[in-house]
Length: 144
Length: 203
Figure 1 (tube, helix red, strand yellow):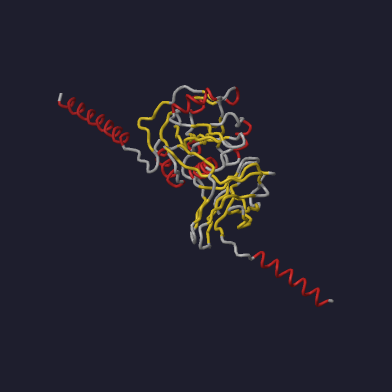
Figure 2 (cartoon, one colour):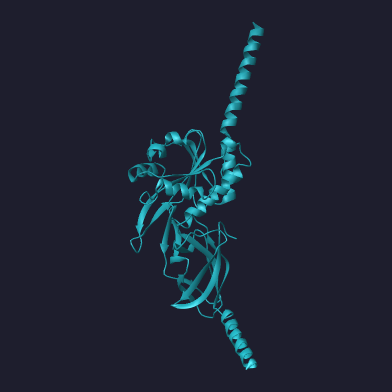
């Protein structure tokens, strides 16, 4: 009986480990979420790398900390800053796309509670309704 | 008689020397690398934003250098980026300029519908010292922003929400309340610091 229990625990651990190390087609570098005054929307920035051999389109991002997350893009036209929602972030096969201040970024709206410096916020990325990456991103005042 | 002539000539030369000195000093061009200098400075038309204790008008622009930026508190990208940059620049300038010459930062809200003086105060305080938020009625804001060439527009979003398009320029106002320079985006921190050191340090 004892060896069987050991085996089961081992097997469960293995399953868990493989789930953690599940090969996501994407990875990120330099991710950070901007610390903003309490209750105000925030923004998320990072470089997203696509390791797949096919193009990937991030169509949705969710976070337990914010009621709504949208992909936005700031553009300047004749000195006027315009921020618009975009439907997706398209990443070419083997390529990467950088979300940065003054450009494409995640707009994090309606925080369920005020965010604080160094707090770690969960983000989930979806490509065509399929979860492709879950990660935790730290809050900071400026790019790390 | 001769002595009188010599004295006259001496005096004339002396006066001319002073004049040349003044002219040369005044005509040294102030060169900005990233900003645009308004030479001569431009007068800002009579305006007032807000009322009572919160009133901000031409008188409020006197005696201190000020950096004015137009934005709104629910702006998650451009406004925090710009305010943080201006706040960092202000801190750096405090190392080189006299305390009285360090410019203050003024955030003029383009979203009077949402931004109350209380919300603005909470928002600006977050980015550091020396930053004030100002909000006026739409009727007050429109002529003031137009005078400074600042554009803004309400853009409806889904779910009854909206965002504001707005100029990203930073307006530099001198101690006499005159418009002296403008910095257009993209702003670079070190360029801004260097230019403000030149511009303010010369006065």
